[in-house]
Image (cartoon, rainbow, N blue to C red; front, side, top):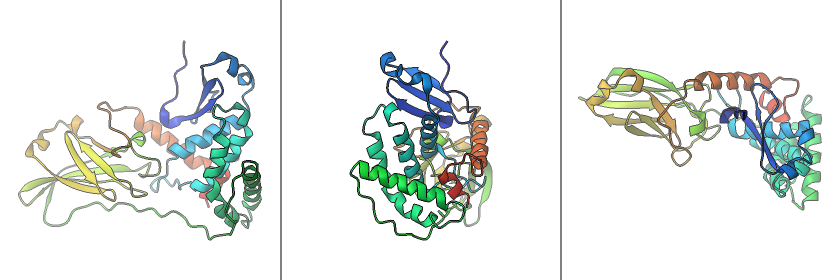
Length: 303
């Protein structure tokens, strides 16, 4: 019997030589393993190092970290995360399926020089930041990559541009509701991971308007689907004229789906376990900020 893979948003993957490993970030259990070349995998699969799981976890954090103002989960610095990814990849270079993975990861981490330099004077995180910066510099030299000069810069905390809801003018709200945002339908860090998208059907000037609001963290073109109705969103808000038939929709069909066009398309069926699963991931991420084994990127985000 094949062990099922964890749901994508809770899966930390590692593509290695001859096999792919999948850790469940919520359970911490041994990884699910898919072997596609027995001979290659036999060289290392019997002794998967902890560094492999670390790389997989950092890969998960880059794709799925649930930034949320509502739940108090700060964003991760992408440059610091890239630096930790590069160092973690180098630690298991001999296991990786892609022979250029480390070189590419180091190149992606070049921007980390500045936030690492800023952290170097931090009384708590300074030693870890200096160690990571030195390791990144060594890897860059090994791969012939030139890093920018490490000029300390004042650390800036990412601002949250929460979308403002509501509509202006004389109006009557006929229907209203809220729906969670499916993380798989929007790029990571686009929408507050713990906040719902809200909608209302408003009677205005003799017609009906569907108004939508979703708390956004950075500007990415989004859209909302309500039944058969599509509404483009700008800075997390949007409105569209709707026919009177929208008032006849059964309650079960009054569901708003927010997605990023070109990134993902909504599925017709909903996952009844999605809300509980995502709440657990948000709680896990919040707990990670002061966990004993928190990454430097997580510890820096918590400050």
